[in-house]
Length: 115
Image (cartoon, rainbow, N blue to C red; front, side, top):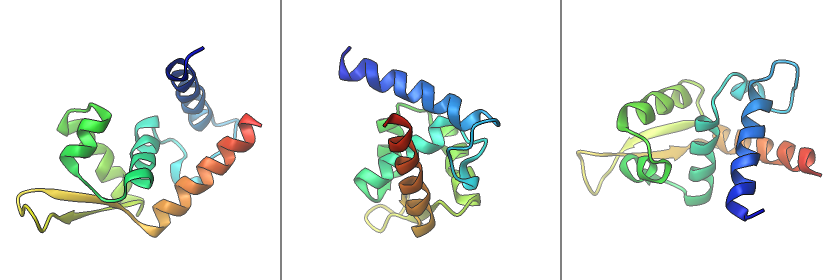
């Protein structure tokens, strides 16, 4: 199998795991969250602060879908939205310290599962 195929399978399995109430492999903060929420945190972990447009492009999402996910993550204190000082018409999305802890925890649990 190619890396892309493995990534797709892993994402599907992980989504089933975090939405299955009988399996406790994620943090309380992400219970009931979608794979989109996890993917946003992963992209921010890898890239740091991103303009909302670049984040949307990386995920190939329409602004409305991304906006809803960002609001959910903000509500759970996992990301922050800040005005872009280079372009006052746009926002930057950055992960909070709490968000970093949560995604690191998810990554560790996922690694254990894979082992």
